[in-house]
Length: 169
Image 1 (cartoon, rainbow, N blue to C red):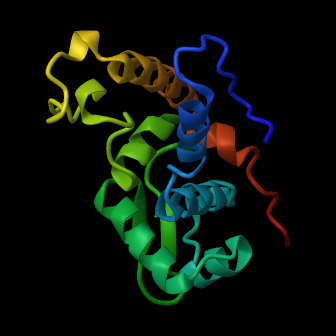
Image 2 (cartoon, helix red, strand yellow):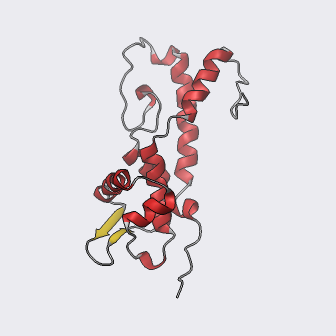
Image 3 (cartoon, rainbow, N blue to C red):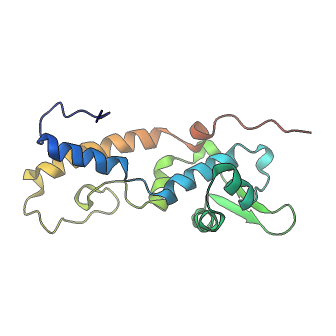
């Protein structure tokens, strides 16, 4: 298996490192992945016109029922507005460049840190760790958290969505 992240430090035995990398590859839930895809789809639309759930569902290959629950969460957390009736749907209530991926991930996924003892917003002491400062997992997870925050913090919805679609007449 070709790993994108290498165990250059040899801090962990290879079998632990491989399991850790496998875990990292599966840690983003479908809810979060679909939420980001839906936000990007909406952000591409001109004039902030409402976009129907069915249109997003079809275009992004997401179950409409699952998508509706995700969009409701995003609406309740101040990313989207909604309009009922003819011409209704969901629309952005903030500019795409003002929506940081850290905020989206925290709303849909929860803490960004992989273990609670390194979380900046949801800190909890690990039950099985008598000394955080001496814990090898703690040290590694701080690096992972900081790297993840750096990437997510510098990316906005505008970065993911790209240019707004041209209006077709």
